[in-house]
Length: 300
Image (cartoon, rainbow, N blue to C red; front, side, top):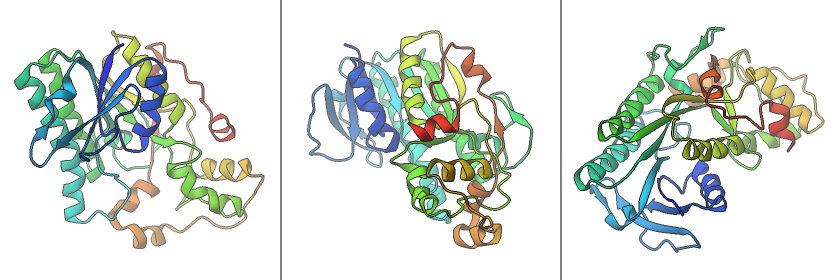
């Protein structure tokens, strides 16, 4: 039974990924800030403290694989200067601490999977199709992704197979974006923002957790990949199809851009801008999406 150490495992994706991997036969070690987390079948919790630069070394015992899911929620609060620092530090400091522990103690890790986001390409709306070799954007979110990835790729210096997933919006029926917008859609209220022409790169949570297991099972997969579904949709498309999933239509106008900017400040670019992103590189690995259209994701 292979052991996986997961940092950030108590977050949105981690809560879906851990039971999936346990079901596939993996043993999971989870790093947590809590000192009294209960041990479950094939899941053990170990304490760490990023600010104090501490990790319980027992967390690494028998571990071959490291998965990093750390990072403060990018869309939870307005981007004040303090919040921006928190968003960067929560990603970089955690990865750096893991790197230092593995490097110093020579733990026998052979695979590292880390997160990033399609925000790497910048918060712009264009018909240009972005691929993994496209240039980094020049806004705040793009700079966060650049630093995030740079620290993750340091693991290649230790001879560790490193995979970075540039994720789109992760869709799950009972969580995240869909859960927040469902009450409006059920009432026939449009959930489209601004022009609605901005693209919304996305991936179903069930495909995302399958992707992690696919990477673990295929040792030749390494490097940076756009982790998004095949179908390219706009915000208007998403709104119409979410409404349709509840048997609704809306004749109301989109929420105006100026209101979104007033409400969210600089963070509004995440909601009002978005471009096409390619997943062709990921498809060449042999990974097959089960939820490759929005209808499949929303209806099952």
